[in-house]
Length: 131
Length: 153
Image 1 (spheres, rainbow over the protein chains, first blue to last red):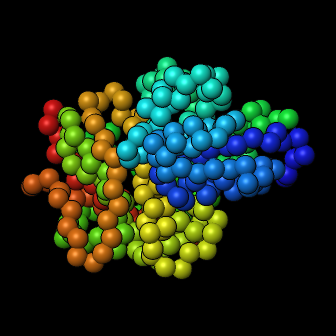
Image 2: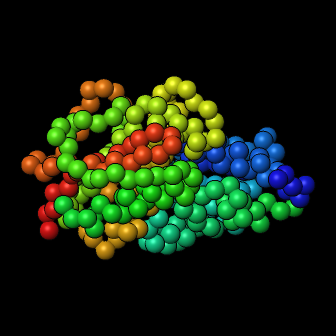
C-alpha cells in the first residue's frame, strides 16, 4: 500500500480520542506517510502550540474537543499568515448539513464524516500528500 | 415516545456496527425493561432535550466492549481500561453525530455523549416513562439500545 510519491511534511492529527488518533495515524502510515512526520494533539490548544512551534503541511482535525474545539482551532489557524491556505481536513461524527456549512465557513478545506475506512479516507486526503 | 425520535439512533448504530465494523448484527424483539437500571457494565449515554426529553443508552458487557474497540482500532485489548472506554466513547459519539442528521426536522438538541462504567451506576431516566430495550446480537457479543423519551410537544 505504501507509495513512494508521498510528500514529506508534518501532519498534525488533532483529536481528543487517543483511539481515533491512532486509527488515523495507522491509516497514514499504511499509505506511505513516515511515522516521524505525524504529530498528535489532544485538543485545539495543544494543536495551536504545535502549529506555532513547527510548520505543518496538513491538518486532520476533530470537531468536539475539550479546551478548544476544532472549529475555534481552525479559525485561529486561518488567522495566521502561515496557515491561510494549508489543507485542513475536518474528520468528525457531526453529520448535519449545517455543521458542514459552518466548518467550511470557518476555513476547513474538506469535511469527512466518521466513521470512514482507510481507503475512503486516503482517497479524500491523498491529493494533499502527493509529491 | 415516538419511533421517529428513536429510529435515527438505531439506523446510526446499525450503520456503524454493520458497515464500518463489518459485523453481522441481528436485532431482537423490543421490550420494556422491568428494572430500568438493569444495564450492562459499560454504557454510552446520549441525552436529548427539546420537543422530547430523555436518553438513549447503548449498553455493552465488559467483554463486548473490549471486543468492539479491538475491532475498531485493529488492536487486541484484553482489559477494560481507559483506552477501551475512550473507544466506546468514540463509537457513541459517531452514533450521536450521525443520528443528528436525521433529527434535523425536529426541535431536538443532542448532548455530547458520555460513557459510564461499573456495576452500580444509575441512569436518570424521565419520570413515569418506561424504558424500551432493543437487544442486538453480533459475533463480538450482545449489546442493547435502551430508550426512554418524554415527548413535550
